[in-house]
Image (cartoon, rainbow, N blue to C red):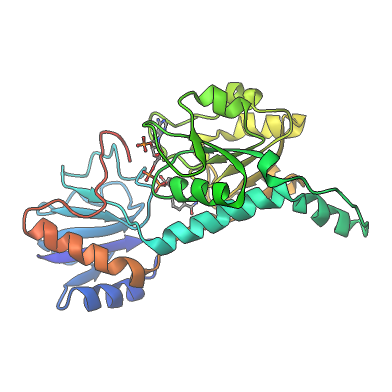
Length: 306
Ligand code: NDP
């Protein structure tokens, strides 16, 4: 295999270089913008590369997305038809599950209300509800959504899941109709990939289907739940609370209305990450496989968008 290019505004190139060298001894690892002769690049490890990034790499054979969501890689005009692989490791699954369990449980156990009561210096007793009486909808039952739904079910929540194809997850009732999931979800967790089929998926009509005062957790991509309708639903109380890890514009701009809303919890797009040490073995294996003319691990389907 020829040289490996690296581009990311988030990930540490030195850590990746070390981890990949350990997994693939002798690798020619080049960090953007110092990529040398682009014709020597055969694999690219990238997170949101700029437009035109791949254009000069005429011998590119593999693109590895440094994360799970490949929305910034599909539909580009600078990318030759090479396999695209995503990252997927147990640590990433555990982090996302912990985020979802935290966000759902914070609402289910009224912790958001106790946070506010404490700020008022008030001992506000709210009798806890049994978790089995709390309905949670999980949209997207993939590598991350599936285990998160299973974990919620394992804790006793009443979980309904929605995905394109039927899924059998212990304790999770699969439902084909999005409208039915929405109507039955006190707490809605959104974990679908951003594709042409999911952009704007949860808009004004869908938010209106939720039970009044429902809670929403968006940990996938901002554009799946457009900000205008969400803001209106939060202001009107149709959506009572939201935990948002992802936004149309990141970082969320100063002065954005979400910042000042007591019923919105903002986290800076870190529900789940992957560490190079955990992922480098898979990346090395993908590079070897593509070198042998085989598909890489965790290949995504660009036509499907995920
Ligand atoms: P996967 O690709 O493994 O799974 C996607 C799931 O969504 C599948 O169950 C799929 O259905 C379902 N789905 C896709 N399109 C549709 C549709 N049009 N209608 C119904 N269901 C659909 O993704 P992951 O679980 O790994 O990750 C989900 C997303 O989470 C990522 O794409 C990324 O955007 C986001 N993410 C966010 C992070 C963060 O830190 N906030 C970190 C990592 C990921 P089926 O199973 O039938 O194919």
